[in-house]
Image (tube, rainbow, N blue to C red; front, side):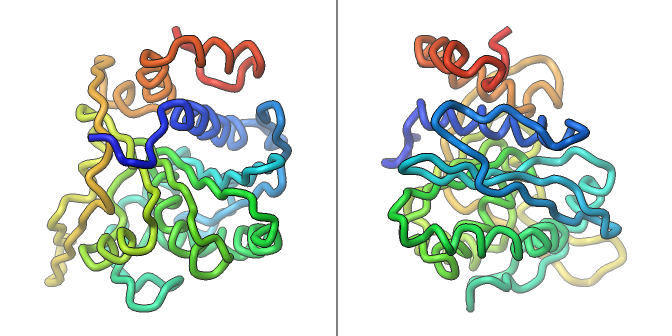
Length: 263
């Protein structure tokens, strides 16, 4: 299936952007490669389980685009947040259902830096793209309705890669009603998009929670021999690049080290 808004070159470019959110986290100084024509408008942190602040992404700006990018799971406390799969009311938009408690709390901690940075740009008529891989894809999903409602972006464009489910059926319905240009790219052999399960009952609890993806998604199929290799952003980028090797070569030529390596 291909969404009407899906563009493979944009997917490749944003997958490369997602790879740099991991570079930002791993670099002692938070450095990463910024593609030609862009500058860093904002770098932000968020708190995962235990209240530890970590670098979680950035906002890039060009003459006609803004890109909000979120990092995926990279620390033990991130994993714990991923596992807190009870649900709470989504706080950013009224009557928009329930969302994953652990992931939502990460987003809410980053929000005070993100919303003002984008709100002051909303009158510039620049197109807002929101992206993330894995946990970062869930954060991007949580952000999309927020940016539309509270930061002034009528038509945000969302690309996620290997994202888990993040909300209940009411949230998924509200998202589809409000965010019309959203591309959920996933590998059919990636375990993370299957989480949390559609029906989730926490141990020693009576409550049962229901999860639903926000849209049907854009399936890829690649098997790189392990759970992690079927999920990492570099594997997604390489699979997308098979459809357009010329663009992949141009990205690397113009921005050495920005896209993940092809081999």
